[in-house]
Each structure stands twice: as C-alpha cells, then as structure tokens.
Image 1 (cartoon, rainbow, N blue to C red):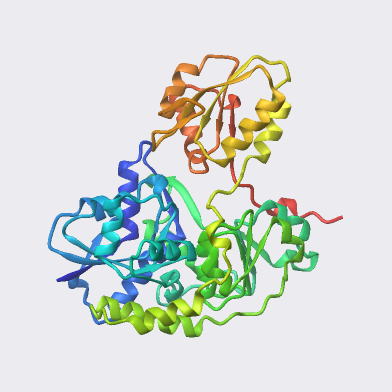
Image 2 (cartoon, rainbow, N blue to C red; image 1 turned 30 degrees about the vertical axis):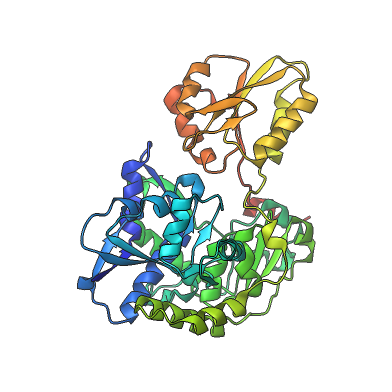
Length: 444
C-alpha cells in the first residue's frame, strides 16, 4: 500500500481548470500544509515510488490503488470541502491529523466518516469540543505546518532582521512605534491569479519564493493563521492582530500574543519567544506513529491535548465571521440620498449582510432589497431565494439598482463577473478586508 499526499501544484492547477474564470487562490498556508506532509512521510523512509500525488479534488474523484492520505486542512463548508466526508473516494484511507471545521452542522453520513477513521486530530478547540460531544474519539493536535522545515525547501533568505507585516489590519497603524517603521516589510502570502499571470514557473516555485521571507526576520506581525504558524515553525516572535477573534485561532493562544481591535493599543512590540519545542516533539511522534498504523497512541494524544487545551469557554461563542462592512456603509452614505428610490441585492448572506440591511432599513425608507446572489450555495434570506451572480446581467442597465458584495471570497470574483455580464462596477459596494500599508505610516 502506498501513501498519497496533497500536491500544491496539482491542486492549484485543478482550480485553474475548474474555476469559471480560470483563476485560483494560491495561499502559503495551503502550500505549507501539503509540504510538511511530504517531509513527514519521507522521514519514515518512504520512497518517491511509494508516493501518489493528488489534488484536493482527488479526495473525491480519485480512483486507483488504495492509498493512505494524511490530512491537515480546514474543511471549509463555504467552498464545499465538507462534501469530502460524504463522498470520499473509496480508494483513499484518510488519516485526519489536524482538521478544522468551519461549520459543525455535519449530517449523519459526514459524522460517520469521521467515526470510521477516528481518532481525529483537531486543529482548534471548537472542533475538538464538537467531536467530543459527538462521542467521536479525537485529540487536540494543532496545525502540523508547525513541523515544516523551511530550511529543507529553500536555501535563500530575504528580509533578514526585518519586521514582516503580513496583512495587518489597517487600524493597527495608529499604534505602530515610529522607531520600527524603517524595519517594516509589507508582505502578502496569497495570490489570486490565472496560470498565465504567475511570474514563477509553477505554484511550488511561488511558494518557495514566499517561504524565503520566513527564514530570518526578527518579528512577524500578521492577521493570518499560517503567518503565525510559520513564524512559530522558525522560532520567530509573532504578534497576531485580528479584526475579530475567531475559534480557529484558539490553539495559537498558547504560543502567540493575540490582539483584537479593542486591544491594539496594548500591543507589546518586542515580544519574547515562546518555545514550541516540547509540543513539536510530541506532535511529530504522534503523527509518525499514526502514519505507521500504530493506533495504540492514547498516551501521546492525551499529552498533546493537555499541552494545548484552552480552559475558558470563549471558544463555543466565537464565530468565524469577521465584519468588513464599515467602509461599505460609509460609501453608501456618500452615494445615496435619504429619499432615493433604490433597489439593491446582496451577493452573499452573512453578518455583513445583516448589519448593512439594518443600516439601510433605518436610513433609506425607499430602498428595497430585491435579490440575493450566491455562487456556491442555495440560500433564502428575507424571503428571497439566491440566484447565481451571472443573473446580474438582467440588472445591468437599471439606473437605480445596486449590488452589495458581502462575501469575502466573492469580492475577489466580483470585478470579473461585472465585466462578464456588463454590470457597472460603480453600482456595486464590496466588503473587503483593509490592511495597513506603507502609505498609511506618515508621522507628523
């Protein structure tokens, strides 16, 4: 029997083929999750000839000889990853090492998949608690990207002794000490592009270019989960700056200083290193034992969970939705007059939609919600059934019609859809994350 590994090149290429606009989101977090699995499997003496490389879509579509596939991924229900539990290829034996569930409304078939392949390694406290409540054997593993050996992948290094700002929320700018500004390097760990737009030879080479920057900075400041994980993997001090705390960051409480908007003024800009040495050793032992099919691993699973379990109850209340609607509300206030006769639609249904709807209802008595759009799911909101965004074509020439894009992922596709259907982008408002940039750091 062979091992299967998720391959970053194959996964991105699969998205390029399957997506409507032939674009894919390249994220260093995904690459790190895939690359560390290959390192761990090869550390067991597994040869290349005993490894089958697959894309994430192959978890459902693969048909071939049986393979053991270790998985350390977030099962994002929005893009349909929960379907993997339900339609898993019969030729794949999954080893769930560090999973996160963005939603816990799994059906019986999905839960049974997890039961069949327990014990389940969990990445966050909420996933761990949920599976425990479902009586599914599990343990708190964290993210196995913590074990990634970057030095084994790239020889070069960039940004030595610099401070990496990786997608830092814009509101942090008011609290950045002036004496560190010259050391800051602004950095983005993802790219949304077509294959022809990629400067590098392939997605793997793109990932290598990103990983160079993680080798020897003196500090990493980020709102990205894997930005923090890769910092810890390299023993680099890290500051997490979040618009809103969500459950997926619970494991990192043990190793990083985490700040949200109400505590940005308390940021300690010279944090001490918090060692992950012990948990790395136990995590590596646990994974290697599971990959060797030694299931008598209660000691290590219990020890790993005890290292990292969060004692408070905040995890059950913290959702995964961050509000990005404040700029949109300001834009609407400038663009609309109180008595304008307006029709509008929401692209995406989430907390952003609720807050914007409440604002419009209170301030624009003649404005009417008429449509709901969603690219991936069928939803009902305020009595309206969702339709595909291409239906905006029917509204393209209506002067008093606006669309409000409330979904974070949809904001990436919006301009391409508008171009495709002839919809005027000036009639659209996009809820997007806003990060601090160098131009914002002007001190008087």
